[in-house]
Image 1 (spheres, one colour):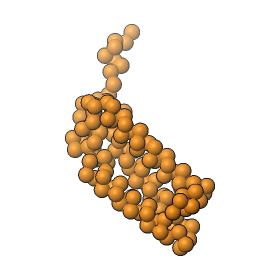
Image 2 (cartoon, one colour):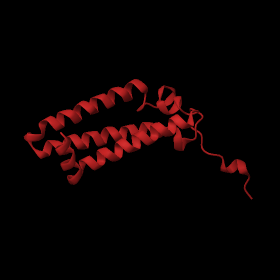
Image 3 (cartoon, helix red, strand yellow):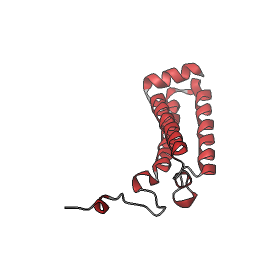
Length: 121
């Protein structure tokens, strides 16, 4: 028979369970990759939509600036994950926003989503 101590979560260096220690950092990296995929997708559409591509590249720059300033892609004590480890509602709100951004960027990279985006700009 196993004791309850055998089922304790694995804890990382920051004292936070490993499964949540880097969630925001990983999501932020995934968002950055999704931005780049969208930029590459818009590059293939043609020169007539160059202004749309510039808009997305500007937003990617803003996202990188935000992520760098807030530590969203860092690990350890300088990370956003670490700073929000005890503020559950903020952690989950940031997580939901990053998930939504990632989903929207991925949808924008699909042929139908890309066409919809181009009609907006």
